Length: 305
Image (tube, rainbow, N blue to C red; front, side):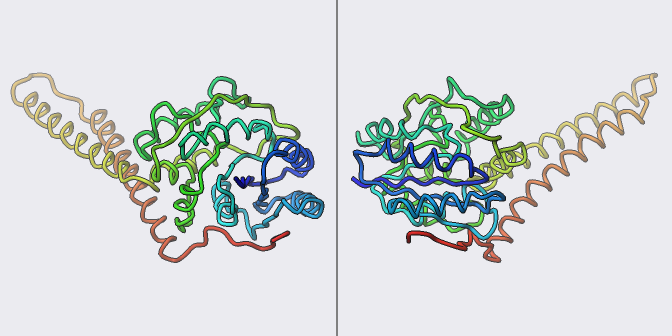
């Protein structure tokens, strides 16, 4: 069994040497390759990757021409992988290489995917935990994710599923969504989540929102249906309010003050209209970029190919 380890790298020059040492130590009993994908880091990450590749012929480096994002970088690594199983993990050592054999043992029991379940002990900020929870919940409806599965960035995937995932050539890939769309033979195992080895994390709220939009618009038309339903409900409410005010006008001596109710209705309906237009615009914009063949990633350099 050959194992490919795909790691997207961004601004982690201080971590790469230790990461490579731990992988080599943890994978002694396996035939493996490591693919480090530099997502146009602003530090010396690419130089550190080249040093590791020069020392170890099982390591391969890919440098992207621009910052395409984590999932795009993962797709570049998956396209280059050759293993029977592919490990996907982060570059900050919050995912310990010593846990890879545990995941491999679990997936070998006729599973297609095995996720590391960090839900009990995540070392990350509170807003990341909230974002993870929201993404996990709405993934159940948008990507057919099993309810009890935590979509961790640390996972092992079979070659069968990887071959299906890399057929996707759109500019906005969402790897977990592609996995859930391919198979339902998904399991997980509790794994410890560690603190970042050095430096500060690169993930922020903007990127969390980007992941949410990839979920919402990349794998389902449910947001469009929800927008239509909201518009339908707003129309019914407006019609009923109209009947109520007409009824009050003819039978009641109390004159209804119109300014407040008018402003509230305008804000409500205006907000629903703008929200619906924004959702539609997101779909149209992504379709436009796909039709214009926006690249999923562009490889600038490769080492040990």
